Length: 338
Image (tube, rainbow, N blue to C red; front, side, top):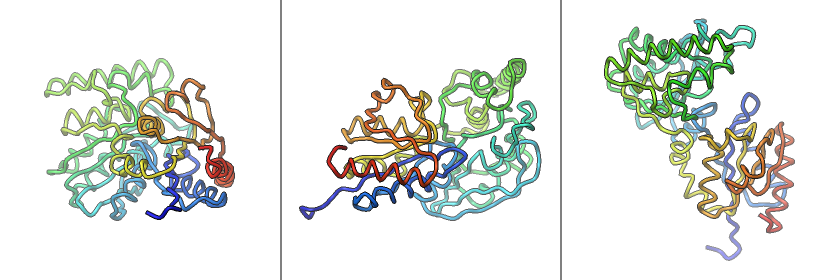
């Protein structure tokens, strides 16, 4: 290796939810670093099972996108996408057909919102020849316990021999899904109780057939969709952040870098509870690699930042602001203060 070799900075941001895709954030940070005079960075946009999972995995695994007719959370027809990787793996995002972003705030109906469309996408992937289907379950509008998806799978003749892997961005068990996620999907206190009772009834049915999702970590993801697929279709539940970072060969790329810059829309306590930025922080701390972040908003206290050894945190919301923040951070890195 040449003596003047300069290890690259590894850029590994999540999406800024609802505003910028992870690829856009990574590109903006990269432009800023190069403006600061650093070598071209290693761009590694990431996800944790929520928004951006399909794009991050497609970039890593290769393949092509496909589309299917499906239904949104309120039963309206839409065209939704999924990806087919050359090795026989399909990638599906729950948010594509059952996402909260598909429902305007004034029309949210936590009782009626269904995962039927996600079930349709799973069937479309199986019909396209997928031997394994990876489902990211973040960002849903639903708390139907996956009942809609199970019905769609039954209506379309099942998933054949395809194996399911569900990537969760939370560890919430089935029985906590209504209380934890219901309010953000439009449920008041009375509705949370109704949703919880419905989930309990569904769990009893699953238990009667052999697999009770209650008490099992991650079964509450997407309002119980993860648990339903685990109980009825033998899905393997995986922490999305760790699984995706491994697919992206993050550890090797991290060790080959001089430091890592991550990012997300809001840095807070949730970051440390299964989100990809928290997982990145755990890995960089263990490896002794410096970690910095550019985020839309920083709501993490000093103790939380210290837990993952976050050294420099900059706030920026637009691509232009992110690029400028990265240029300033790049100047610090270039000066050897990383």
